[in-house]
Length: 514
Ligand SMILES: Cc1cc2nc3c(=O)[nH]c(=O)nc-3n(C[C@H](O)[C@H](O)[C@H](O)COP(=O)(O)OP(=O)(O)OC[C@H]3O[C@@H](n4cnc5c(N)ncnc54)[C@H](O)[C@@H]3O)c2cc1C
Image 1 (cartoon, helix red, strand yellow):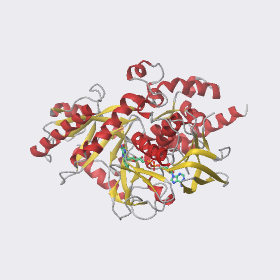
Image 2: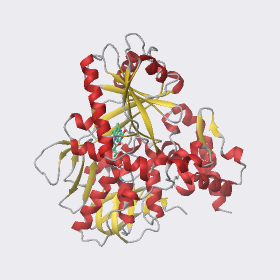
Image 3: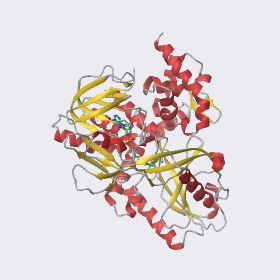
Image 4: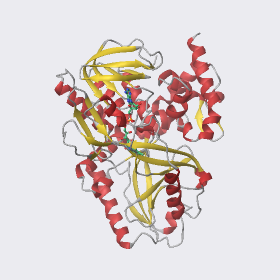
């Protein structure tokens, strides 16, 4: 039985730590706390990865961009955490991604020299973080011929070559969150979706079961608020003002043969770029924007038409083929937190938390951890749990997550030798065999039904939908299509996949009644 379940039925009256929010930060906190020997209840009002964590660019950043603004500490921390994810805790969910900066006529020789020295500095960050060159190769200058071989659609007129560097890419951001959640649940953390925190203090929370409406009061020795851009709803001392980042989703055939991500300069700007990011599932993301998003924080932020038009224009300027609105098969937006007043500062200062994170103890005793990045979730969790261990005098072991593999993790050579379908290995690592065995056991269907793509251009399989229900707490079609898999990022694919998701739910329900 999965310990990731919807609602509040059966939860205990008291825990050492209650965590609010099951994005990358909250699941990371739950894993950190439970692996130190603490009892943990972690809740989300909706589902795993319901918030910002599923709307990212899906990069494991080395922190290069922070060097440019002189934030050496933040850059080093990012590079260290990237190395931990790629080499120890999640090699199955991460891979090296080439990034090409095309040297076109709009990039001056001076800008190219500056960019090149930036990439060299990025490589120094990698070395400083002790990440192997096998994991992330050195940056290098490439010829126009090689640039066009990697990105055949680029405009060739005026192209004098490119700068090729490497960073980390996630298989999928929501999959990282789900895997952290499953790892925490495997160690004994109680993970509950559809459980909304209505109120929180340093000694407990009031929860509402979003399925039954039942209210539960739980006491805790510490409460950690990891509710992302919604953190201020639970803690009057925290005020966040979000900014929206939008991505487009294209089919790979729109930019045929693309084998690298491309950093496309924004025409007329010397410092702004748009990233073109091929994904492992046959799509390409184009992002991203940065627009103020004042007013109430929506459950699901929506991209605007001007943002979509801007991204299309920038990519069209870099590629020979002009992109049209009809090439856009999906678009999504996420909210970055901007902390305007902090409990500790109390002086009205603002800080952009899309770079660094903050751990704040409010007057109510709640500890809020907010900001940062997917890449640095582990460090954020460590800092938050260190804070509550110290302030609430908890009897806890030191942090272990630096070397605690997530479920399914193994060294890359071991992953390469696994016999299961490579796509399942990329998403589940050594647990790919468990996914297949569970689906066989639960459904009693033949492999050709369980392991076939569920629709044209939708590589996800019935087996992983079944596993999403049995082991990953998926409770409905939305959980399966929008978060356990990312089929929902392309609306037309989602429509095609709904029957498979409904079938998986029916098969598991029938098996539990057997
Ligand atoms: C556009 C964009 C692109 C990004 N790209 C990258 C990238 O490529 N790489 C990278 O490292 N980082 C990236 N980031 C940063 C990263 O995505 C975020 O820092 C991270 O996902 C934040 O996670 P979180 O868990 O703190 O918040 P969230 O993921 O938003 O999680 C908060 C959770 O709290 C829940 N919640 C809210 N209120 C309550 C309540 N009352 N009770 C219970 N639950 C509640 C919500 O349902 C939600 O699931 C990007 C950010 C943005 C905006």
